[in-house]
Image (tube, rainbow, N blue to C red; front, side):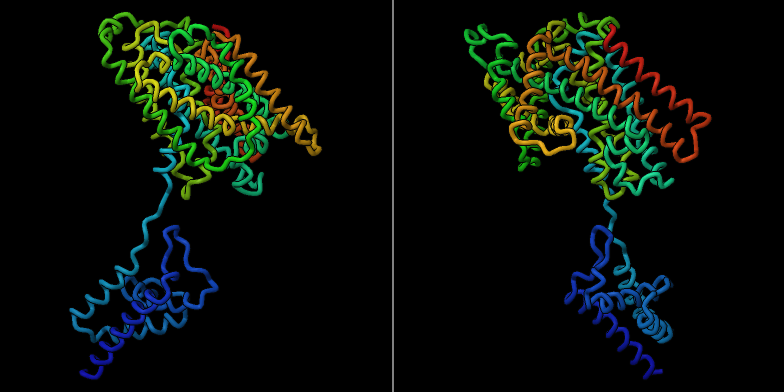
Length: 493
């Protein structure tokens, strides 16, 4: 018994020493945070796995795939029958510690942050104007309805992806990882053409909005005497060479820095607007003036709401970057919910603080050095992000002009310049920024976010041989009809 106990103690010590030694000599053999093991070609993999296999087998009775490890584990188990209680507790504690899996990173937190960043941009600064135009109750109700329907439409897009992949209609997830790819896979060439057309129209409208926003903001930054000599159209024409030069930009180095600048500038701008509005002397009086509902203004304010939340075509990149894609919809749901609360609070405070006369670009109403700093940050942010925003649209235009052939540099530059010049011409005759958002958000974004996802899901289910029935069929038709109705109202009212 003494010999056996000595042998058992020695074997325990050798096993624990081997584990410790391998973990120090071959740190690459440890489990990685992503869950992937060490590279199979590493000569230390086997050595690193044997001790861990011994401990897991001894502590939890799991199968050990390595024959050598099985032999050692079996010997350790047999000899362990003679261990004293303190020794066995030491081995089991060590084994449990070694076998504890690393926490799995789902990417949900990053997805929530990236979605919120996609929601809040220059369009958010029209929310006070939207509340002042449409009324406190009606606009709040539209925010809530947009959240519900936008989330339902997103679920349809995700299900369409899953259906097409499971039915092997496409080779894999990568074929439906973009909005254009999913539309083409579900609807065929016609869907691809429709998606590209909506992309161009949407980006064109957003470009018009960029120019109006920047021009009106720049005018408000000038001295009063100089600002009086400028109209929005005159400033747009004066800054046209800058917009054309930005459209020629093809290098996107420093995208992360630009994104960070945009997030910081929007956050600072919204916080400062909220503070100025909340401390306005007429805040209480304006609460009595702003209406509860004004349906006649639907075409104006609804586009602002839609422009914020109907961004599904931009969220596929967020999904692609998640290690656990099953958490994509919950992450977006959290982001939409938080954004809805922030948007409602910002819009209400801004409308009550600045009153019925609040401008569609609310930051133009800020005064002082702090206001000037906020405006400067936002203008710089929009100028830097313009090439990124228009990139896909400009590529589509270039491919259309090329007709499948190589495009020369002069023709490419001329195509981009023509796009920007056309946007500037339209921006010069549009009344204000809010009107642009009304048409772009209420029609184009609504089409891509509410009307098309049900059609895409229905087509995907038909291609998979499992057509929608019952409640699912009702949801598909309901969301599609709501999207079409909103599109019509956004233009007709």
